[in-house]
Every structure is written in C-alpha cells, then in structure tokens.
Image 1 (cartoon, rainbow, N blue to C red):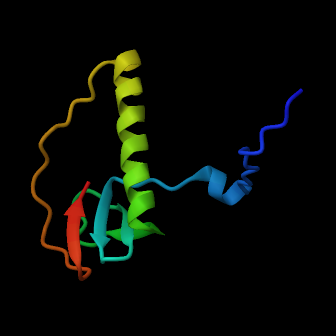
Image 2 (cartoon, rainbow, N blue to C red; image 1 turned 90 degrees about the horizontal axis):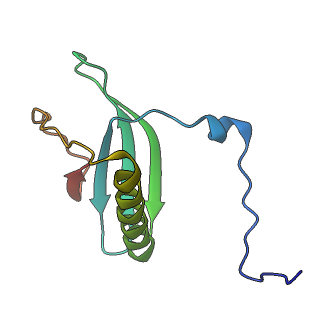
Amino acid sequence: MEKNDNQINIELNEELAEGVYSNLAIITHSQSEFVVDFIQMMPGMPKAKVRSRVVMSPQNAKRLMRALTENIQKYEQLNGVINDVDTPPFPPMNFGGTMNQA
C-alpha cells in the first residue's frame, strides 16, 4: 500500500464533536484576517450569544467559501434546492470593522 504524504491526522475531542447550534453568523474582516462569529438568537429575546468565533487568513476564508459553495451544490443535487426565505432585518449590531451577516 502506497503512503500518502499529504494525509493529515485530525483530532476531534468529545466536547467539540458535539458542536454548537448557530442561526446567525456575523463576519468582520481587516486587511489581514477574517473573523466569523457564530451566534445563537432565541425568538423574542433582545440579546444574542456568540457561541463560537473563528479567526482565519483571507486565503483560508476564500477556501472556506469555495468549500461551502461546492458542498451546497452537492447537497442540492441530492436533496433539492435550499429555500432561502426572507427574514426580517436584524437590529443594528456593531463589532467594529466591516460586517456582513450570513
């Protein structure tokens, strides 16, 4: 059997394997990094909580965008088009920097 030198051994502990629920992502960026805050908003509650924050280089952010696009296309081929329903606008949030919602 031929050894693949490009293979990475990735460790995932039990706590991280459980994951966290997020129904909003706020993306900010500077010249050198992108910050994605995964947020959980509860209906009717004026306060939301950041459940996880991921900081990455612009190059890795672009790789993530490509991977998400590819995986959404594969998902829709198997399961049909994901309906992107319009949601009411969120109240203004400001974490500093340039911000987008996902």
